[in-house]
Image (cartoon, rainbow, N blue to C red; front, side, top):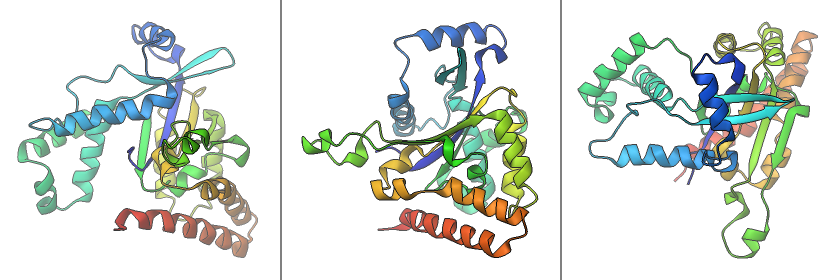
Amino acid sequence: MLPYAAYLRVYEPVTAFPEPARTLWTAYADSRKRPRRVHALRAEHLQARRRLVASPPVVAPERESADAYVRRSHDMLYICPWETRLRSWHAFSRFRQETSALMAACYMPPDVMRRVEEESRQGTSRPHILSSTWHVPPSWFALFTAAERCLLLGGTAAEQRGRGPATAAATRTLIYVTTMAEARTRVEAALPYAPGTGHLETVARWLAAFHPRALVELDYGGLVHLLDDDFLRADESVAETGVALAAAARGEAELATAMRRRLRARWRHVRALESAN
């Protein structure tokens, strides 16, 4: 079972990486042994589970991951490194900031908390991947348009052969992909009209750290295995966000409010599943 998490990824042109990383990533992209896109989430999740069941648990790999997500577009190779070690320390740091010291101590031994604080002080790099459990943050929708959507529900043949529900299909995917230039333009346009712009400002700063010719991808990730076909077909969250922002820019407050309420209602149902018995 994959985690019910969505991902926002940045794929940089391989030429944006300094040597020797550029040569290594180019060879990696051509390797037949690397995890393909359809299996990448499972491979990453398996590695994480192995670290957690170790004794004692390994909170973060000692070395950075040598894997990446790969895209090719217009004869250009794009790389999104997994950066598992960096993302692990970012996740632990966020957990520590959002959790009381008493509660955090139940999950994180003192030596781990000290390590988190040390890594947080030393780490200045921003990961190529952001993640969100049980929902897609509304600020992420502002980066894309409905025309950039790609929905694959997976074949039903496996279900008919008794291999499980169609929602478990490995090919089941909902993603949006756009250029960095478009993503930055849309974020800047949305900032004056987005309620609670703090999250959107954080996304804008994150995008600014990467190459201007990069690609930006929103992946519903493991959420597609939680949601049924009807929900995914009817999910127009990106389009609704666009309508809400455009209406706010025109001063049509009633329409903007209606779209935002519709968006919140859809994802309130999904987030409620986190605490379902």
